Image (tube, rainbow, N blue to C red):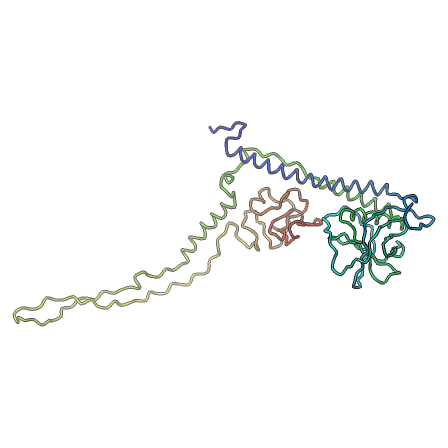
Length: 386
């Protein structure tokens, strides 16, 4: 009997150890990402409930406040930008949530910087105290507002201003600025409760996405394919080659190496000149020229299908016994446990909550139907179906 002590001296124990280490590592990465987003959502919920301003916060600022106006937040470093071409921005909304992707410190095309100074958010307006003057946007006159998803730029359209303008902020301060500006606008239209309800819904939805601790693999679950380098993929390729080579030999029609059939001709004696009339020459064998006989043509064979492990079209999907392809059909929300043996799965594959899709870099992910599916792999290319 093979030795199977706790040191894992057999291949089955080594396989179970590798699988458990990989699963635990994937689970810990997914849990850490989930916890970071959960902490951010709860921080925003507390901020939305306690976000208040005061008139004293505006002391020392070159800004005159109305009787019922208070300063909510001030940012000392901001730049005034204007859009060179006329554009139409969406109406302001109360969508809140943590930033999903990193902002890059760049200025979008068509946007120019015209001034710099301090940005101040009050209960009635957004003000930039710049070196060339003051620019303000009253909440009641804002008709369009848009946050650039890739750059720390917020553009605003107002009734009393022809050109679209806005603010370019430091990348680390832009998320807080956008959230607090949304809260200030919500207070101006008396919709703070709607923002709180939206955050509560986001927290509840995120709680359902918490990754589960993976089950522990045991040595008894190890399959013989684990001993082959490459696992099932190697066996699948070998099986395909074993089927293709005989088929190619059968379909081939090698030419006759002799150059064609030859027919033997009987040898006949031929008279020859002799010095002595009493003796006749010995009969000679005459080798006739070989006659080529054309063999009858072979009947035309119908083309045979190319053998494969999984018969049927796959539309570019790798050969697999699971019946998964890219041709369309039923979406796969609970893929087989061995799906990553046949497809190139993304890191933290099992932490996804959606259906199976192929990303643009060729890997597959379990985030189909979710926001920002395959965000780190070029986006979604197509759906894996069965």
